[in-house]
Length: 187
Image 1 (spheres, helix red, strand yellow):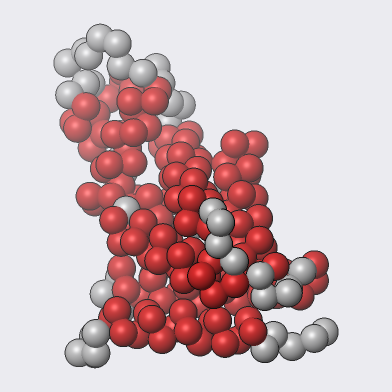
Image 2 (tube, one colour; image 1 turned 180 degrees about the vertical axis):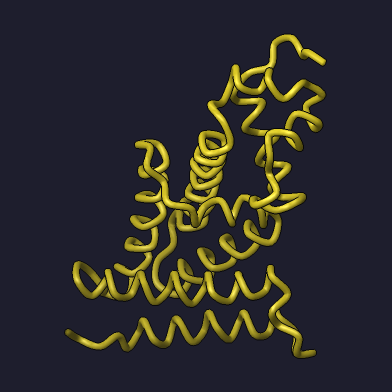
């Protein structure tokens, strides 16, 4: 079961796809080897084991998300930027739930940390449109992140059982974030 020409990039891409299908917690070397049509030991030529694989997947997924959010913010400010950012985040997560779960893992490698920093910088840029900078922006970033990610996490986990349309709820949540940012307290 040897596949000639298999690369680390192909292994990691297959792991990203597998994470979206079965969840990041179910990405194993056995499942990945089966997906790629190779023997498990041959994967060790490309990754040092599951921790290395999951770190690589988290870095790639965080980079993808940073790119998506950066594109959404291009040329926008204030409420327009917030709506675009929120929409890009939610649509990406709903399309890639396993990758999303990987992005919340602690990242220690420089590339992963840089991707996380790009996400935070994008959110900080969004907040400048509300006149929030420095210390006030740190608190606001935490508010935006926890509110959006909390909603999306509950949505992807099936935590909303009420019959109310989720699109309506999401639109109201984003409007409430906009209102909160527009009246953010001075500290």
